[in-house]
Image (cartoon, rainbow, N blue to C red; front, side, top):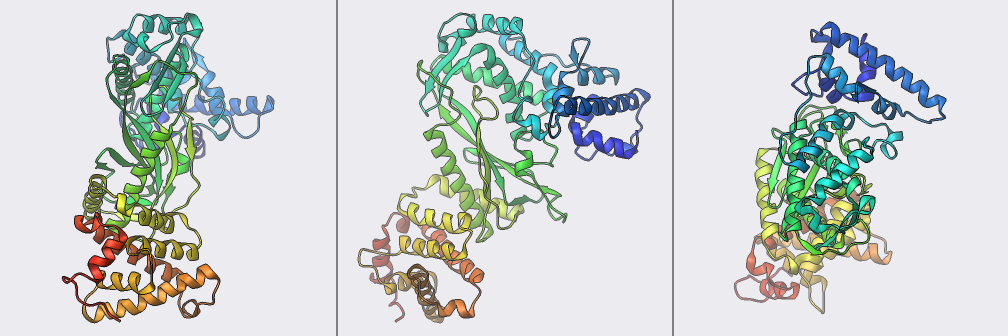
Length: 523
């Protein structure tokens, strides 16, 4: 086994699976096997695996395949009734785990998971990613047993009470999810959902996956008896880098960083980014977990849904709060972007997700100081009524995160100014005068007032197609950053003041420009 062959093994099956089959307890993305004292059985296994990969490549091409479907064929190989990888692990002195629960349904699902765990752990090629990799090999005997177990359980309360393969979970929830899921295939969905949700939580050890199965069955049972339950949805995040920690707990959610690019989850390649510097680790990429509460609405369901208007709304609100907490705490005029949206309900099959193709303008470094401020700002945004500033927040969101053209970002940012400080008969003076008085005092106020008028005129030139003298002498990227930063400063100050936050934009102008507690504005 030379270095080149070993690198090929890592490429095809992933370091996590190599650790598993070689019976290494410590899972690391950078295992340096050259420095380990591998025993003869381990070396033989690596050689045998390398040979089988070559054979699978030939078989795939011979059957007309395009690309690389090695992982699919490797998953089909069994020895003595178990997977090839479990057989390898046994030869290296490892033992198959036992179910952690004595509950009949949970134990049954855990037993299947233990058998299939290495197949789930293996990296998937692009070819099999959307085709074969999703399958867990079960037969009618396995399906019949799971059907029997469910019929004798409280879970039967949320089924259609049918027989055989027509037996299905059938219900809808208060947050818009709807299911008509065959019970026999639902057993596979629950196992895979438990595995990939564990990947999204950055702990996909077998013990964590077995615990996730137990929690998912408990969730389904509580639904069956009419209780409210909490499940998760996940949003991929690019544009952040954590320094000194791997996760941030937030009200109603958790933001976790990928350890590396070896995570076998569905979204690793889409979300993880490599970095050449070592200031905050070699990789970045995050998953934002949001908690949802729901209960059974009715025992009616005709389709399977992987999302709903309500769950999407909660994801959008959570993402907005996270993004603004980031830019408020880091004082950045660019911020993180989403890469995927996925629902983690037990019956939602992995692969039911939506993708985003946005790209972050930069990667914001979050250290311990900024982390504390981020949590504080998220809590503020989570607890306060933002109805009065939702329109300018939305415009700032467009300007910071979504507009690729700087001219469009400038226009949106200045519309956000107007959303915070304007009234029916809007004038340049009312907007810029109130902003200058709101943000500065003394000579700095007069200086800012003059600058705001120039920037406001630029907005008019951009909207109406006029020629801008400002753009002839200044960089448009710098102007974009300036108008966004001004908008952010105003927004942060308004949100921090409950009195101003409760006002309409016209009431803020009156409070700042007219009432006695404020000085006269610059003219």
